Length: 155
Image (cartoon, rainbow, N blue to C red; front, side, top):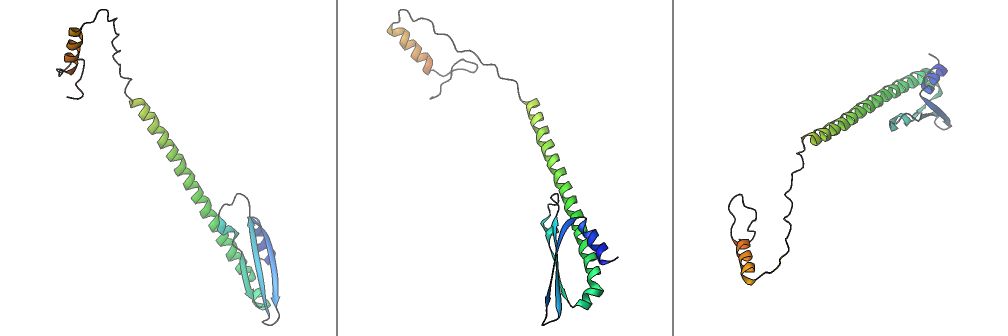
């Protein structure tokens, strides 16, 4: 594969920016290949640039192989990110289904509303004497047998 074929293959998954600088004292070049992943790529590592420093002769012999290795790692990383995304989405869907099933089950097993006994209606008192009041107080404070209608709360 030629250098531009490898760049093309790399550019199919991201827009590339390349910078080239030279250090005259050392006789070395620095080449930066900076990908800008497409919007659908959520993995931050896919934006990691490739930065190489070497002599021009070393670039002539090894730059294509360096690009190929970088592209293959990026491709593998993108596949891993996509697989992880699918696993997370499946887990999320399973969690929502589980919660929904639990809600349906809880609704189905909820006991019917308990029938309540209506409060007795007070009848007009009419003529009330002290004996009636004392009899009512004694009845209210007396312990109630099982199945009775009133309870002794203070006992």
